[in-house]
Amino acid sequence: MLYIELFISFFQIGLFSFGGGYAALPLIEQQIIDNRGWMTTQEFIDVLTISEMTPGSIAINAATFVGNQVGGIFGGLVATIGVTAPSIIIVLTLAYIYFKFRNIKMVQGVIMGLRPAVVALIASAGLTILLTAFFGETSGIDFANLNWISVALFSLGLFLITKYKLSPIQIMLTTGVLGVIIYSF
Image (tube, rainbow, N blue to C red; front, side, top):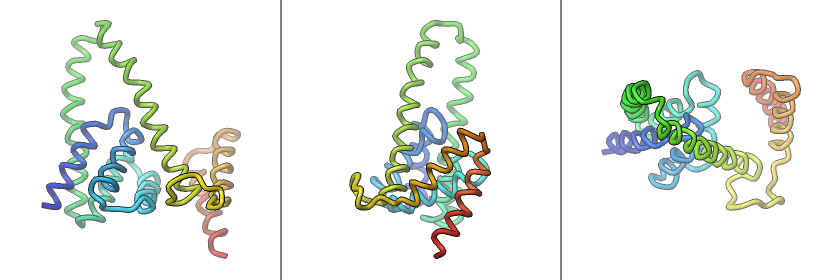
């Protein structure tokens, strides 16, 4: 039964996560924390951190990690198949339709209408991660719980990526090493 739940949950995530892996984050969060209770918000953030650091799509990596955590290796496999199956089906279908009807105004209108919604999904996931990193698992913004080290590391990473155009790998290595140094003492 657990494997069926994993497959269905991640099939739904794969089916409704338009816009890529980051757009899927609110859906993954809803399924694994709110609906199923498989993880806490902090565990979810840890999974996202690991998923971002490993090669591949964040949604597929997250599905693999969550499935493995909940149902072992077979759970990871089932969740990964669940999250990728809708994409395979939808992409093959849409590729056929798009190339057949791409010059029709209605098709272009649908694509233009979906863009802002995708941005909203990505922003929602980013805000959830940001607030959890800065304030912990509180129910709101309470400056008494503000983690100044997280704010400083975030600011440093943002500065390095915008000013010096460092790669995400360089940013993660830099802030990760600083995190080890800071939190070891």
